[in-house]
Image (cartoon, rainbow, N blue to C red; front, side, top):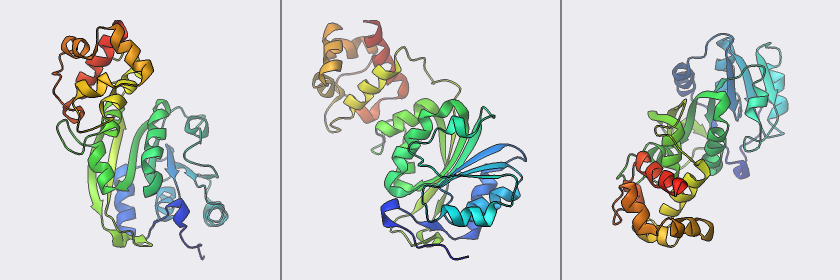
Length: 273
């Protein structure tokens, strides 16, 4: 079977290294009958191995040229379902029904990996775990602890909703076409609840986003220049200095030094003011 060439506009780099494919499936360790969602089945390197485990595999593929070939290759397997949809818009919870929870595995396109990751986190109510191959720098960001130069908004989002760990690196030669960057496979286990209770999640993410707006500035300066809707909330609570002091966060600190608990403290103080 001949698959079409990778499409640059889809950010496709197909996994061709069988050893790497086997290791990813081994890390996921699917159980017979459990529901696994594969985002971006591509040429089927992971798909073939996943089917062999006896799991109920739901493969999502957006490329209309790849979908018919995947269906031709795997449709004879009763535990295989192909969903032609966009990972950025699919309702995963509906796709995995009647099961209420599933696990995800994916080799994510570099150009939209962050957007897909945030989409997956947004549907975490029906997800237990994700084993994802991402650009190595992205995994560095999502696992970055407080005070790391790599820590950013995405780091805090992942910390809030998942326990994340880097598993192993993958060389560019494992793909066709060969990318210019290394990849890393990471495991994200969905938390049953945030590490610290949050009174207003929408408010929390406005605060975190504002805090990282200009990385070289202190948290105080960034909060002082918050968007209008958040600025009004801060002013009604006494101003940025008062908010930080009452949240136990030193005004001269920068956003990357704050733990999730400290972000929560600031947001919860504002929510209660």
